[in-house]
Length: 469
Ligand SMILES: [Zn+2]
Image 1 (cartoon, rainbow, N blue to C red):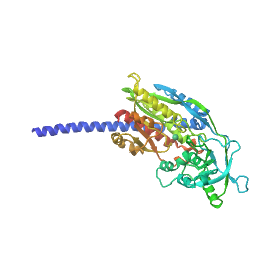
Image 2 (cartoon, rainbow, N blue to C red):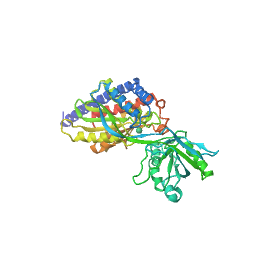
Image 3 (cartoon, helix red, strand yellow):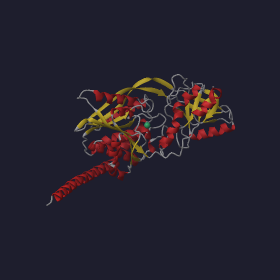
């Protein structure tokens, strides 16, 4: 044979070996991923965990007795899973307590008067037991408020009525456009001498549920009470103000900010067999607003990420790297759990060889227990490309989107450590119907959708562990 033929033959042999190896590993991966899917969809542990968390414990804002109970539940749940390590990380949290009465009355004392569906915005000061009565002025945005100035706003109750934009496909973008009125409305209105604010709920739904969420006061500005009203009531009030611009409101709520208390992140892991120091972390947040059950936000993320460890155990998959669930405390008020964990992760990176840990990847599940579509990736282009090369393995399970984008606030603090960050992306259409409202209850979560979420995270963890990034 000629040299050229030799080379060609050798090349063919190499090509055959290489491609058959790839075929084989693609095939074995797809078998394993299907096993993960089958286990996730035929076992109801995660769903039962969610039922307990929502219906037996319920709303569990940080500092509350329910949040303490939730910590005990999470620890007990992880302790019962035969993991390599389970521990609590202590931290301090705010302890804001909603008052028993929450009242907004339009035209109080008049025949035409009516009540609005309302709730305190999280962290708001109260009105005092006597309540606040005042004329109301409606504004669309902060520009509006500025134009009115002290002259028209001073001594009044400001009504922020900015509907969420329904023309965004991804509803988080609509939320992003209006949440600032809930968060900063009180501080902005107080600058112009307002005595209180009411805010249209940050949701696309047209219904009677008021939606809460955190607010931030400004240091140098008076702290004034802030309440959310339902979208239906916001429309109703706006209609009335067009006919009767001088309408009055009566506001009453008696929230109290108690001293801070100790709380915990709950952490469990399976140690890696080859690189135990490389951590693949995943989690959701245990705390949830007190006006609902915290089912989609974020009981779902908690039980799905705990389930990842159960799936690995049940299938006998021994990860090369350490896989760790972090059940975060206090995402809703001040992200103390996230901050404390980021400090811990950094310390572990800087200590000597014995305790050394590097956070290799982190995945957050905090977008509701709906059908997943893929992952948003906050990492290098190279990492994004690598994840995309696994697409054919995940596509059969509805996971098609692996794009560069944001992750989540609980894992965001790991970014400076070089950690590749991921968020489980779900169908967002109904999320804000429930988010931070009394409507966020267990019955709103579909068992299969929840389980497909657990599967999705487990499959990604499996591939990252096997192939690295
Ligand atoms: Zn959340």
